[in-house]
Each structure stands twice: as structure tokens, then as C-alpha cells.
Image 1 (cartoon, helix red, strand yellow):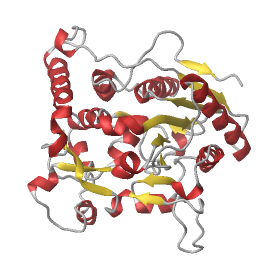
Image 2 (image 1 turned 135 degrees about the horizontal axis):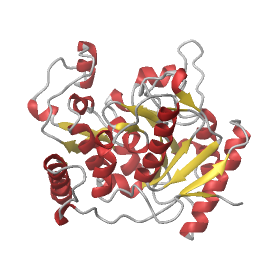
Image 3 (image 1 turned 90 degrees about the vertical axis):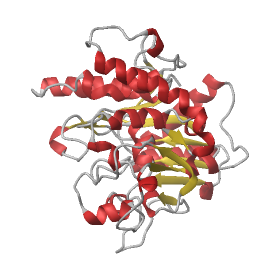
Image 4 (image 1 turned 180 degrees about the vertical axis):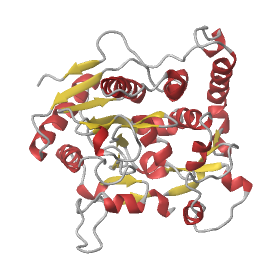
Length: 363
């Protein structure tokens, strides 16, 4: 795996470390300790901040998000304000379709807190993956009305192919281009309108460069579901596989997708600007994901925020497994959550931290 030919050496050590962990998992019994060469790289221990939501109104989200921003400013010791680029990106989630997408009130609240700190409306942009799902969930204007839910804000649709730079890509040789439903039109779209592609093109997943080239920083706004290959579809996946081109190929094998998520999340340039993950527990799904099924969703009046996506995903995994146990479904086991172990191995975050990981924000 490399991040463009000019930057491959920066991530070579990450690939070697992850390869060691994969080999150790494959060759040793589950209870055996990993060899010294594969001990996790230490990641800073940061908590998950929690703001309670009295309801899911715009006013409730505005107050909760402002609490989060003020807590971050107190913790970091400096205010949030425009930097040299004067732009901020918001990575939204719409890939489960209508019913399970980043809540509009949360997006509006984040925008308002950023504007309050000096960011201009036109310099706060949204990034999503699929044009159809973005339109069905309302992030893109309806063809009937043409009314935008976020006037003045650009919505960058990654599958349009307009927001990738040929110099920035994640390179993985296996597997070849793959679409999970073998839909020829989808394969053609993934190949930028071509019905065939070269082996070199099939190796590359181009990254959403506006988030880490054009912006001072970016905020991840995922929604949580379970996932048959990755275990948890949340903070890590929204920032990686739903944030790049030609990534459906990784789902062909359960061994490749977790490694791809971890390695992409560890890319230094992507991590540097990834300031925060904000997730509302307004609706999350514990089985049957990533496709929305209202029968298996839960709702909690909480807003969580953290700079550690691994910790967030781990905590949500516990919640989903508790729900599965209550309803008679088997839990998501360790083999299905290798993505979290791999990401921790590469220093992206921690599966556990000292003390209570969830800390309430006191105004």
C-alpha cells in the first residue's frame, strides 16, 4: 500500500506493521499474545465527550454542538478560528439511504458554531459519496423543487470524479475492481464512465482531497450501523472507504477491507486535518446494516464527540452487541472487528483508555 508514488515511503512502516499483525492473527491461536514486533503503536488517550439532547430539534443540537466546541477550546487551550485556508469540510453520511443519514439539525448546528467563530458560509462545504443517495436523503436539491437544504454551502459529490487528485491515492494490488452486486452500470461508473480499466487504475483508490488540501480542518459526521465485513460501519469507515474512489473492491474478501480501512485512516495527511468526529445517537442500527431497516434501530438522546475514531467505534460496538443480545441475535465477534485492532496497531486510536471513556460536558 502507498499514498502516491512520491509519498510511499512515509507509509511503508505502517504497511509492514499491519502485515505483521495480520500474519500473527492468522498463524496464532486467538488467546496467544502478539509478538513484540506487532505491539500496538501508542496513540494519545482522549475521551469521548457527551452532550445530552433533550430532544432532536434544531435548538437542542445547537446547544449541544456549542457545548462540544467550547469543551474542545478549553481542552486545547485555544479558540477555534479560521486559519490560512479559511475553509472547513464536513464529511456527511448518506450511504444507508433515506432514514439513516447524518441528521440535518446536527449539520446545521455545526455550521452555525463554525460561522460564530468566523468561518464564512461559502467556506463551509459538505462531502458525500453517492449522488443518488445524497439526493434521496435530501442533501442534494430535489429535482422537483430545486431547493437546497443548505443554501450557500457546496456539496461535493465524490463519485462525480471531480474531487480527486491523481497525485493522491491509496494503492493496493488486491483485489481487482469489484462491485458487490455485479451491476455493469455501477462498475462503469466506478471506472469514471469507462466499461473497462487498466490494472494500474484498478489498484488505486483516489482520496477526497478537498478535506485535507483545501480546508483548515474537517469534521467527520458518521451514522452507525453494523456491517457484514467490517463489523462496525461508523467513524473509521465514513472517513475512509466512503471517502475515496474504487473502494467496493475491498469487500470481495473479508481479509482486505479491515486492512484497507486501517491503512487509509493512518495516512498522515488525512489524519492531520481530521479534527473531530461528531456522532448523534439519534438513530443507529444494530443488525442488517449497512442497509437501513427500521426494525433494528435504536435511539438515544446523546451527542458524542472525540478525536479518537477507534474509541468511538469500539463503544458503539458494545452498544450494538448489547442490543443484539437483548433481541436474540449473535454478537459481532472479534474476527469481524479486526478493523479496530488494525487501526489501533497503526496508532489511529485506542480501543480502550484509562478511566471512564465517556465524559459528560458540564457547561
